[in-house]
Length: 438
Ligand code: AMP
Ligand code: MG
Image (cartoon, rainbow, N blue to C red):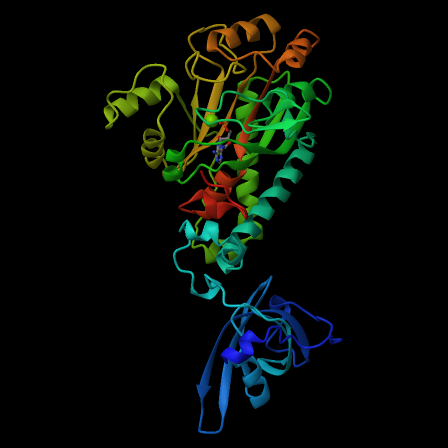
């Protein structure tokens, strides 16, 4: 066996087979020869007698797993020397394999998809190429695909325009709670990688009024956030903004969006939700609303007695609060000074902002953040100075604010946190194909 493995490759020569179907298209009843192409997920050989062996092959393709039996001695021998994850083509009739070709012989795989049991392990971030091949990861990514298509359908119906997001720029959102922005040098000039596209949303609503984007964010998060199970260094937001809207409009839109996504996933991904053993409950509108002040009082009565007025809600307190709920809920009206300069101060109650977070229930924590925006130049500049934001890189933004920016409201809904909640995952790094973890 060792000699054979050392003599890579043992692929069959070019052959002219045509893939005729996928695993999920095979019906037991169809007594027609099929040609499948995919991976050796696992196999086991049983000796029926001294002379006869049967090889039980678990074959995998993009659509699922299926067991076949191989009894022809020359084919049993051919598979027996292969590593799991080798790529093969098989000609089948019912559950029998009549012929097979080796397309790409695999070397031994560090973490075999067929043996993975701890799906939230950090080892699977490192060994991503193999973790991605599990039925569980396929289910998660198919659900994420359903999220994307339902978001697009929703916004088309609501007459929002999808725009391409910016990735580099002279300035980006500084209000990212302790995380750092990535930077790059381009012909001697420093640029930032987008931490959130809030400033660019304000730019675009001056043109199309109602916009959304799947926007990539790079945030060099603190190492401690690895423990939260909901921080990535690279993630996507469903970023939404509407001109002449207030924060109640934005929350209404957010509720409708979330329910539309949940319904679409339940409709389109029954098999995947079953595999993940997730019973996704569709919430009813309107979602419950608590103000920041009410939340602070509630948390102080729990084990968070030393929370100060005006302080951001710590991760562990947010998780504990979210555990008390069985449906998504809003926290509104954060205190003035606690959030980015672009969240609008409430003119009727200057100590608070016209903003909100949406929380998932069950300990999953924050789902989205949003607000009405500051749109008047003097106000924005004063708040930036108050917050000590370095003004370098913002010249274009200040110029723009003096030239016709309307009031607006919007939000950002984290794609991976949404996927994590819908799928009921312990760690956020399961909720994306290529996780970057602090
Ligand atoms: P923020 O503007 O910081 O409130 O971010 C908007 C949304 O993006 C949040 O409500 C989360 O859903 C998501 N989000 C923020 N930071 C991260 C992160 N480090 N990893 C994954 N998702 C995040
Ligand atoms: Mg937030």
